[in-house]
Image (cartoon, rainbow, N blue to C red; front, side, top):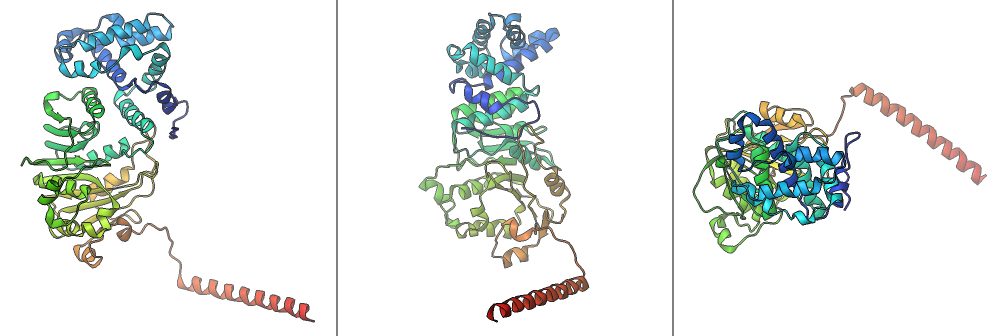
Length: 432
């Protein structure tokens, strides 16, 4: 599969390199290995702290930063040095490091593959940014029917959740790679659930790359639709899985909403876990905004003044347009903000997202062709339809004086009469 992304001049063809690497070789652990090598080099004066934190100590020739220099000098020992470094990591006293690198099969790493890996590692100094690029693209290459939300959108969700407020106890029941929490400036504790095992280990590496203490994160490798515990969180950020499972016992709890839509059940479950000051930022489908089977949910959100903001976010990438909902248990207003920005193209090698969204959200303001504030009566009049297209007029227009319109109309009428006369003359000539 060929994925075309806008790239800055002279950047590498990242999708091509990832496609060329054997599908069984995951690039992410090498990003983590480079990060750990850099951390060890930077901790010369405090090597004991590094050893205690990561459970390893590389010898100089095992530092990936040094191996890359050897590779550039075309030295023959690079591959054996990489395998020696992997052996160190697989024997780490840090269980997360040990588990992550025990999944790497060094026998599959050929010289050609390692050359490509080095080119990828050297293409970007910001390893967190490189992680997001590689993690998303590896998935997209393996799964042509890609349903994942692109990383800049997840960054936007986390920014929305932390704007004008402090995030303390965070919950993400449908995490992919822990990005929802690693994009936050700070938090006290996060609870996240991750369905896919590979994503689970990528999330562990994302937490390492973000230098977040593992004590601050409770991570489970499972799928949650309804979380039966009664824990409450002040911040919930979630991008629901594209295909969620639903069981009959799940439906009974929310039977009054008369829906078997797993996205609706997932949303209700998250609302139940918000504390009295809690804020939920999530993505949803157009169906939940307009369809009949979600009407009771929409009535619940509007009548209880829980819905705060609806954002139609047109990414412009592979038609993955989404809708973002902000639900607030502690709203200070009784109206609703709708945002519909123009089509954007957030890619990995360009600015992340349109800052206008955050500014409008932060200031809660009306911007022509971008946002509007709607009262409850108007939404009820529209039968609880929450489609932003209904409330944000996006067509460009300019004011024209009535006298100018009348003048143009007279000119057009005169021109039409002139053309009619010419046609009549031509017809007369044909009949003579």
